[in-house]
Amino acid sequence: MNIVLGITGGIAAYKAPDLVRRMRERGAEVQIVMTASAEEFVTSTALQAVSGRPIRSNLWDKEAEAAMSHIELARWADLVLVAPATAEVMARIVSGGAPDLLTTICLATEAPIALAPAMNRVMWSNPATQANREVLEERGIHIIGPGVGSQACGETGSGRMLDPDVIAATVFNLTGGKGEGLLEGRKVVITAGPTREAIDPVRYITNRSSGKMGYAIASAAAAQGAEVVLVSGPVNVAEPPGIAVINVESAQQMYAATHDVIGDADIFIAAAAVADYRPAKLVEQKIKKNDESMSLDLVRCPDILASVAHLDPAPFTIGFAAETENVLDYARGKLQRKNLDLIIANRVGDNCGFDRDDNTATALWKNGERSYPTLSKVDLARELIELAAEHFYAVRGSDTQPKLTIISNKD
Ligand code: PMT
Figure 1 (cartoon, rainbow, N blue to C red):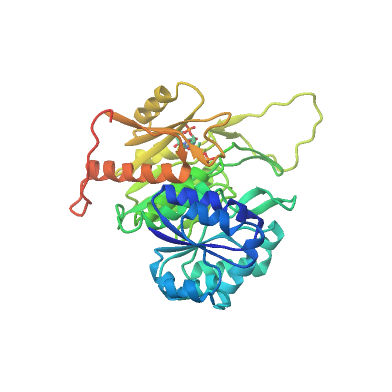
Figure 2: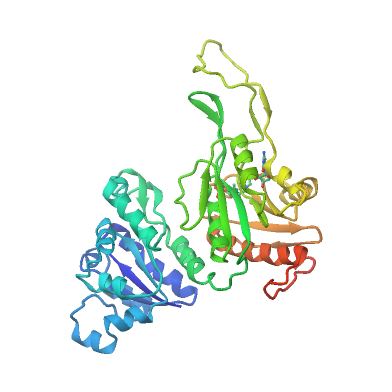
């Protein structure tokens, strides 16, 4: 894959050499195009060394243009990725202006364009930037991130450029996954994120799920051509482009929203960390701290996954098992008890599972299993969707199924 990597003038440009390495490790040829202000943050010498190609930055460089003109460069690209993308470059691309080499290539290319925004949180949430983001997305430009966290300016919020590994994996999902179309014409419903179970108007019970795993699965399924509906608890993850997202808070709302859309679904994937119990009654006013101790009466929440798996007919149903011990044993128990086609077992706890960019998982089914090494959630999602497609066609059959390799026991 040929990638034009546009680097603009933000502090996150220091991550560009790492991003180049990650993309080259995946077999991409990377041609870097820097803006003048990017050179304030990262040197072209370092970037030339990691990319193995001369850096392009000047639209009027006669020698470079003679070797490969900006139009040839725009045609050469299978993807144009701008990372970091500043508020300024987003605005330029929206307006169609082309004052430099990078924006000229963005205007002249027919390849997909992806932007990984990076800026101060107030700049990101500014209505002008958000309006530009909306226009870009409407035009089919992929917005990767930004992430939430501490920023170079000392503030905390949304606007951090995502990790190079996550950007690289997302880019390969956007392009590499497309075209294989393993789930073309299929509808996939996915739950993601935590639920919140209200105690009173100001407090709730929840868990550490960030939604990253479920959102990555939604993107991977869409990249394989599926129509995806994502039923999401409250998260801080950017909505994947082209995917219908239904936002909910509680387990009961997630149950209702899932059953509203599950009717014609081919595959259901439950990646959400749904509360097992909720307060028996919602107290209407804030509970006052009058006593030394208090107890909460809890009742069971509906089990969304088991309820879908027992529908008649049921979609091909995949659950997750989040465990801190006896991971595979407990997961096998859930596979049988909940009547599932597949279950993805992952350990959760300190430094694993929740709210991270990577995950380690084992997929289990009736007569077999497959373990994955620690992978970014984006890469793991792509693997799991490929596995899901193989098993889906093996179990359900289809005249239109892609050519399959059926996995035998314990591969
Ligand atoms: O969101 P991240 O920070 O990226 O973290 C990812 C993850 C660890 C949350 C994810 O990989 C994961 O394991 N999701 C399932 C979490 C969970 O609730 O596991 P469980 O073993 O408690 O539940 C088993 C299955 O039943 C899950 O598929 C769950 O979605 C489903 N369930 C559980 C209870 C309930 N009331 N309804 C359900 O549908």
